[in-house]
Length: 371
Image 1 (tube, one colour):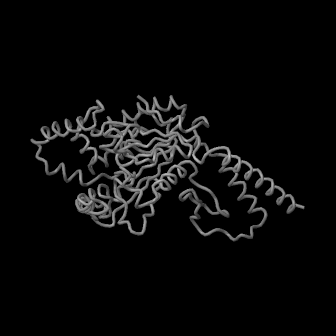
Image 2 (cartoon, rainbow, N blue to C red; image 1 turned 135 degrees about the horizontal axis):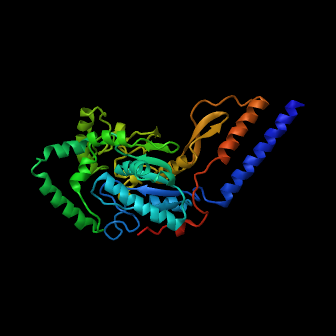
Image 3 (cartoon, rainbow, N blue to C red; image 1 turned 60 degrees about the horizontal axis):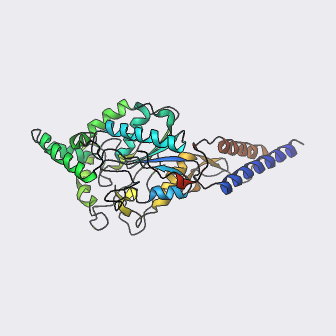
């Protein structure tokens, strides 16, 4: 009798779970209702208009792809060269306006390079935590970028004010967005010492998930990595000197890219010599020939939204939209009570998801940028 009741309850729960899951998949796109902000690093810009009249794109179409999957996506702009604190304030102001326009109550922050630190800073220190659903960092310098220490170290102190004035003026002429530029402040915010202080003063906010993603170059290949091949050896030497290891993406050591829940690196094509710092965002479409850019960012978005599932009672993770077991599954022959418990856990996990913080509406209405 008890066995029959257990089986009937299992059947009921499976039916309810399947019905809700199928309904959700057929009624909306995979990322419908998600509000995502792609936060650029130094020397970056808002991809709404891009740079050079739209000829240069920081995210190489990633924002458009995520919108095609149903997400509402912002690419907030901030000073290309300035302190982390100023850039964080600018990003917060942008997002406050954009979220109000798109009726987003919370946003998933995806920050590249220093954009990851900007995401952490505004979440913790600028009163923005109530509006943040998750923080995902891509190739970010959580322990600093040793190359910045090296460059600042070779510039004489007497020369820095003159160099700063000249380079900051150049940045203003290139970006022409009216934002203040301060190249030396930018460089100082990338150093190993600054990062140590930053981490001490910017702890995680309880209740918010922090994920990190990384990539690296196999070697200084001038064909695939014409720019990063020049900086890779410097970063390699600096990484070893500061105890961060030699593996790097041309700008940031891999050990510095790891933070919170580390989710690993993208799978590159067989002929690729790794993925460098610029290719990680598909900057100017430079990465799409070497790895599945869209699949990678789809994974980042869906991991932030649905971090854990269960497969035969074992935890699993989403990889390119597919669930992958993290440990060996239990035998398929489950006692009724165990299977019932498994269904309850999955049903509860599915029903408890609250990653969508906007009305279910057409993504093509979310492309407008905040002023």
